[in-house]
Image (cartoon, rainbow over all chains, first blue to last red; front, side, top):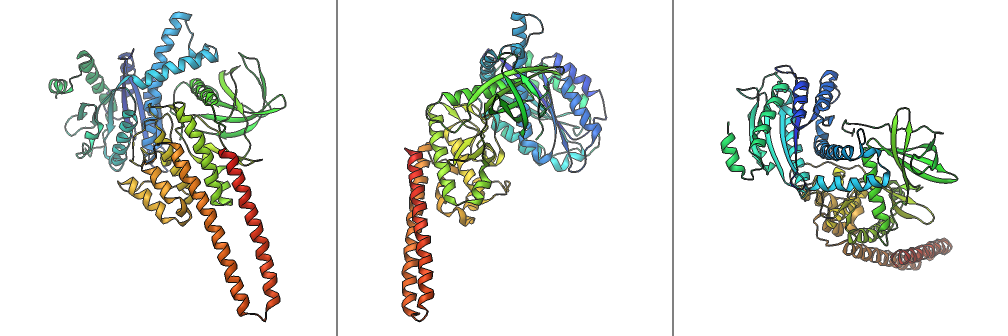
Length: 244
Length: 329
């Protein structure tokens, strides 16, 4: 189990999708492929967009992940917390599957006696610490996000600090939507070093289009390519082949 | 901050509600809500006549995780600060199953307000106590993690420092489970979030800094270390501790005992200094008496007053010394 890999999509947005496929449907599809979709909504101080916020929750629910809606200044702490919690949840899901195979249907960790649960929690903790983690980050870069981008960058660097403190390996890649010419644009290929994202956000689209659905769709493609490659550790070779 | 949305359990009890554990069968009477945090809620309750604290969480598994930490703390020899673990169980209701755990109820004052109303020596005293326990915790292979004033409480008779939340406890060498930005070296860009002794010692240093700035400040600019050191120097209240705080911030302590030793040194120096200044005052008083001999009577009463104060102070510092010896010994 030490070579287990957890695959997550982390979506950071400040509003509602308004172009392309339905993001909730795309998120369900991602879940079917074994991915987890976490969504973080950024709201402006004093302005809570209810429609956008309920979409945030719906996408995460469909993608089997976590969601939270926060102000930009709370972004760092939220991003790392949501990511870690979602990891734990994924591992618990795997453990629960094993349990129901042994103990019968509809049995989960919660149904065990408290002392056994504690022991299982130790296993879950161990796995969370040592598992490899692949995160594909999707950042909404539509016009309204412009002043929030520095906070997003800060939060992503903070996330890599938290994850780097784990024993397991981490790999990140970064896409923005809408892109300059395409709906979704690659800013950073798979890399173990998030530090290289500094400066990736220089060129931002100024359009008001938010193609969240297509962005998740693209994330799915990127992941399925990566999974086909298997657990190839040679990142450079991989990047060359998948370069778009 | 709100908890990320996922499968949540009901995590509220009512005052006056009776709950019976599904597995161990213990009965509890909920008295009132004590506090609410990111993970869940804590209630005051009665188990028979005994007052206890009951914690419920939005996620059942975070209860298991905390109980594991609590049990670990109670296994470590020489730790007196953590709450005693009493019970963990589930309670079923029409709206589902709720997991909870029961611990000793610690009555007391919040840490920072207590320090506000009393002198610096109390902070030093409590931190000496805290560092002693941290040393034992680290030796046993654990790091406290989320060390902040809100997780500390001062209980009375006698005044002593206690931990009330061990949710951040992490095995040495792993990634810190829970943290609060002001007390987190990662936030200030001065280190990673690996569970090491120096992670906790950084938080202890920030605890002292928080005593100088009751309103916590945010990181401005890129160099967090520089900002913090400047803040230490700017606040006169922190003067006696400034070198200790800076050493903690810069990870120049290898273990908690070193930091504790430095604090004890400061305590002793402070005592000597204040005694010295008192003697000086007395000398000055005598001199002024010689000069203004006509108002003799007024002076004598004044001196009497001072002598009374002086004796009280000596007595107080003697008591404090005894107390320190009691804690350290």
